[in-house]
Length: 126
Image (cartoon, rainbow, N blue to C red; front, side, top):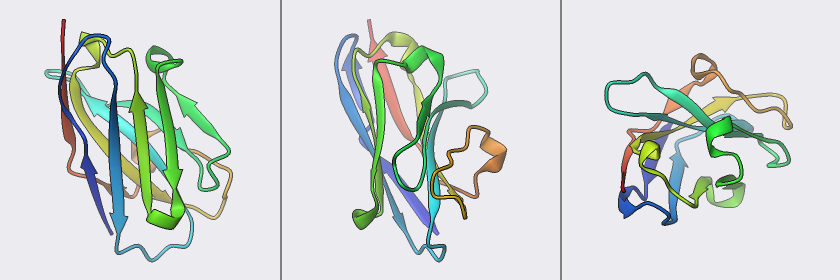
């Protein structure tokens, strides 16, 4: 299984950006997805998660109301729409997937995820 994250870049505070994550080589029929990020000098942290059926999502407090996670199972892709970006959002963003038998469950802990993308860098200037 391979995950390919893309869409990062350099933006200004207040701008919007959408990250994408494409999945290939999957053998499991159902998988939850998540986004994590790692800022310079900091540990990787949870950002957002979505269930297989897309009905259930969860966000870390700092991005609630600004970020939206979504997925298109037909395209084996997930997205992270980021609005009102702030300098503190600067980080490398990673997508991750978790094989699951529960179509409605999302996962928050990084240790729960089975596969990871290579990361895409976002820099938000003030």
